[in-house]
Length: 239
Ligand SMILES: O=P(O)(O)O[C@H]1O[C@H](CO)[C@@H](O)[C@H]1O
Ligand SMILES: O=c1cc[nH]c(=O)[nH]1
Image 1 (tube, helix red, strand yellow):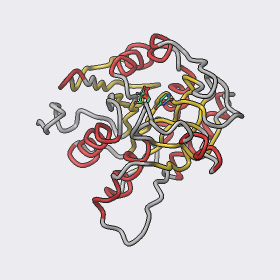
Image 2: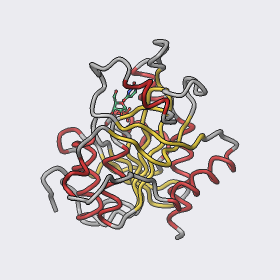
Image 3: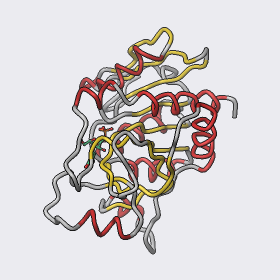
Image 4: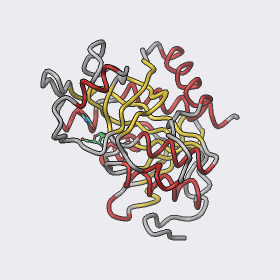
């Protein structure tokens, strides 16, 4: 079957999809961690693979960058391909001065400057939130793997280059830990469709100091976050 953006068989995706922004990070995960990975979608080069991890079916597919893009892919996976859980595995800039390069953060909630929630015509302000079961399973998985996973609010921004040089400092005052560009849209789609979502990120750069990892490192080396997400996926399969 084909939707506007995914051409795959109806049962082509596993119950849980890991979702990096970068299609090449998706390919890296499939080739590095999945047993017998099969390319199930390649529309627009947004590579989606399904294989197994420790014998359990798991998929990985890229979201592209920004809320409009993850909004499309998560909506189609949840609505038309029977996907129950999406775990974003992204990169992010540190806002909190307690974070360092390569720290891993799970987004308990997601502040945003996006207007995505306007479509729901709510009589108030929506608070995009991670699924508790996915979040607590990721926390347990990290602990069992001996990895440090920090938990707190993310900022999901529509702008990578923002004209307001103070914007990130203002969000820091409100406790945001790190800035990325997709989690709020993912959390809203999951809530509206009765599905589960979690966004995890690895700190790829420090916007206040200029320290940064390379694009190659972002593509191929955020393996601890990938392992936490994969372990979470196989534990969620039993629920
Ligand atoms: O590395 P990914 O997962 O794409 O995530 C971050 O990187 C991109 C910006 O460089 C945005 O998509 C942002 O959310
Ligand atoms: O969205 C993002 C991702 C990485 N670093 C940033 O500063 N912003």
